[in-house]
Structure formats: C-alpha cells, structure tokens
Image 1 (cartoon, rainbow, N blue to C red):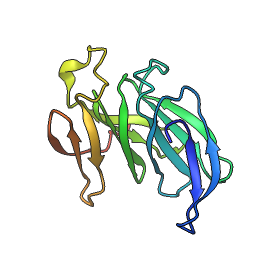
Image 2 (cartoon, one colour; image 1 turned 30 degrees about the vertical axis):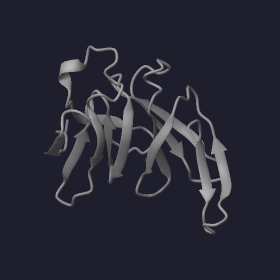
Image 3 (cartoon, rainbow, N blue to C red; image 1 turned 90 degrees about the vertical axis):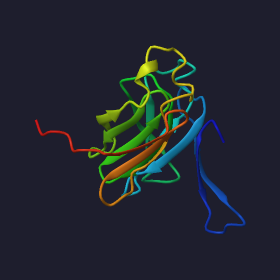
Image 4 (spheres, rainbow, N blue to C red; image 1 turned 135 degrees about the vertical axis):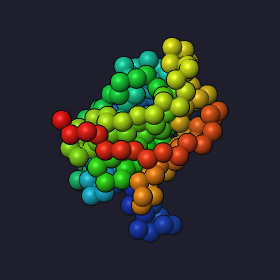
Length: 172
C-alpha cells in the first residue's frame, strides 16, 4: 500500500483481517512510521509528498490510534526545510527522522500530538539550494537511536556513516 494507513489484526497470521483503512490529504507515497512508547500515537512519513510540491516542508503525519478501528489524523507537523523524509524512530520523548537532503532531524514529542524540532545535523549542507536535493541522492537514509548511552547512528546514500550523541536542548 502506498496511499493510506492500513491497520490489520494479525492474531491469526494465516488470516489477517483489516481493522481500518484511512487516507490522508496530499498523499504521494505512504512509506514508514513508528509508534510512541505508549502505542497511542503513530508518526508516519510520506516519502515523496515533498517532491510533488503538495506540502510546504518535510511533513510528518501524527495519527491518534487510541481506537484502532477509528484512526484519527491528529496533526500534520511541517518541518523547517523541504526534504523528503525516509525513516523515523521514537525513543522516549524524541523522534529521530532521517531526511534525504537534510540529514538527521530530532523532534521533541513530549506533547505527543504536537512535535517540534529541537536538533538537527545536516549531512549534506552543500546542496540545500538544489531543488532536487530531496530526491534521495544525499542526506540521511536511516538511523538507529536505540543505544542505551544515547548514541545515534545514521547512514546516507553518498556521505557515509555518522555516529553522534544528541545533547538535550538548553532550558529557556
């Protein structure tokens, strides 16, 4: 499926049952997502909506899946740059997004339905003015934020492997 969110009951793996299907505005290519730790909110990216020009920045769809048979699109977070989002993962109150063209973006999701960016590392700053920079030729492809010591690794198509530690933002 590339055009909607699908929820299935796979209790009987030989007989999956559709629980719900839900479309969303400006769909291009429904790609990947991750639940918050309470498994209420599901954060989803559409990999190519930025390329089609149907959104104004990197978009993350925030679904409230409290009732699995009635998914609710609770919010659309629009990031500060126009880059195609590829893979995202959640650890605690942080979402780690890999974005083609703009690298790793870190969002605070302590208010689960209202993410906001708190950190980023642009692995390909040399091409930010290239209109095709979000096509997957550079930037982050995926990341792994699950190390206990807080290290995050991410990979890109062209720039290689990055290992970093995200510091908490200063308190204002």
